Length: 458
Image 1 (cartoon, rainbow, N blue to C red):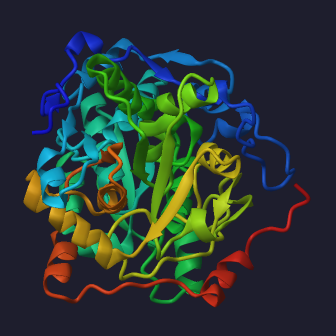
Image 2: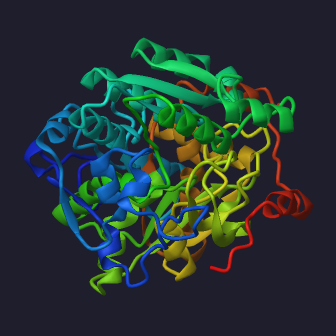
């Protein structure tokens, strides 16, 4: 191990778990643009959102000024089942790369749901229970969010209806069965159970689905079923708020052992993991207290940041949801079915979109085979089989470490390992058999999605 005078695994004590979530919007000069009503084009009010979301989550969604929001005691007690999570010094990966860089990763896979998604799922389920609801609906892509919310709903004895992107439903049966074990119903999307699902199946015969499709179905199910609300695992302000516990613990561990990161890297699909990891560090940068490089890594097959447009667009394919100003590929964009990981959403968090537009975040798109090559290297050196989503961040962390090897710079790199890949073995099998291919949409492919974006005077 390199002499950094830090342990291999850095665990905070239980008493050091944050007791409040950090709201990065409070420190942003340019706030993220508000969600708007697709009919009136006016910012959504609390009353507009009530049929869809839990009341307390709406308050959190709209709060641009409160810097620290207390974590309810019931949620904090649940966190203690698996938090604080470790910040791990990747010494074996460093040796394999023969790099002067110091590499650390925040590991969020040490809970039954297998990913960071539980941090927000338990909070959202708590607020639904507190409001006296019977159950919730949601969508899931690769399955981590659906698994986490199913677990959280089981804890609070809530019904949970999950609409799972059809290609993932078929490729990841074990993830589906974990949800069912926790008591959730799981429906492949688009389905024939909702008006939106039937319409999408008619317009796109044989479609393998997308998160946009699944969101539409989940929202329709929630708004048409008394005693239910819809809950989302990424993109929204409230979700990045809950996930800030990741970055707060990471920052606390760094300060405890004198680690100063130069580069902080996270995978980016809708933004929950990346936003949660970087938020407290971004706060320091926004306040002028420190400086960091932030790199968002997305799949080349769904390149919202690197090739998308920063405009208002529908958050779902069926156009039943509010509109958000975000980097988007168009609500009608459906990623190639050969993409094995998550990170398939057509848009990006309004918070991260604004920070990217303002130049605070870099973005990089990487191809699928290179991602799984990085995942394999990581598994063989660090002993954890990483989730395909997290492996996008691993890819760029390795690239940056190898760049340090070329230049001789001794930089410190932190990336988010959002979860494990033990339910993603079909993808690993395809890679190991040499059957995995890369798909990069052409400009013509992307134009089909862009064509459906509303031309708003905003």
